Image (cartoon, rainbow, N blue to C red; front, top):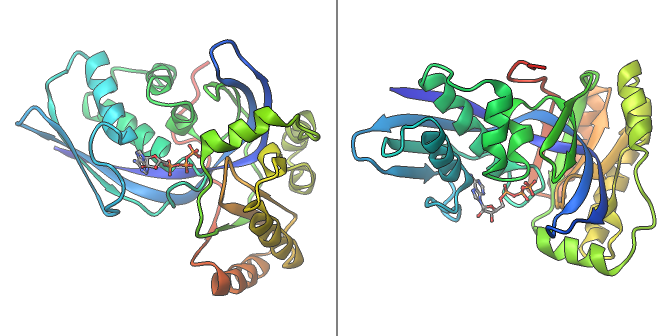
Length: 292
Ligand code: ATP
């Protein structure tokens, strides 16, 4: 029996970091958005009692370091199916180390696929709880859509959908290490914060322009030399008519939001002359229903 799932990428409409907590994690406050760029994940049962993974990218680990494998193990344990053999296949399109939650989304897709395969033993909320054990961003990726993520990123509040638009995503060749950015953030106090409340109000009104004007990611201001490239891509996104442009997560991918599909195409074409990884995507709503 084989099940296929799309694993959609996430973008940060905003990213704010608060106090460091006693457990070492930072208090996060993020508006997250699922977008149409996706990996393809397939899960099939086997008789050999092992969980194995294959991936089209050779440098992605296929053992327990792969979040998809970790998710499969967490699910089988919770469902009382430990020892069941599984074969996972990942076709990755989401760039790795981009701040787009590629690995977390693969893990969430495995949780959804296994839940479907075993006749839905868990509701959305329960799947999100299992996801927390796999990684901080995995819980959001279970249902996706537009959501406010707080705590480590695992406390989720569904928000009104982002109005329809075209999103140009561009990733420079380099990746930025997440622990390194957090260390930099700890050594220099933040000067600016996003107007998260303003973004929530704008989403309530369905006002895309007001959302885009308020987009901000605190990691863009930690003084890393490579962020100059990020700033340059942002300027070009805006010059091509983006309503707003920021880096997502800990980078290095940058996105710009457009209402005009032609402007988005022009921006993507121009940027792809200098950067190999450029895509045009659209927002995607929740993939699982909300249970209060
Ligand atoms: P985030 O937005 O959650 O910070 P990211 O885009 O920065 O994520 P990923 O692309 O998810 O990062 O992966 C980062 C690291 O995780 C890579 O070094 C990779 O080896 C490891 N990894 C584990 N599982 C996966 C997976 N299924 N796909 C891609 N990378 C994975």
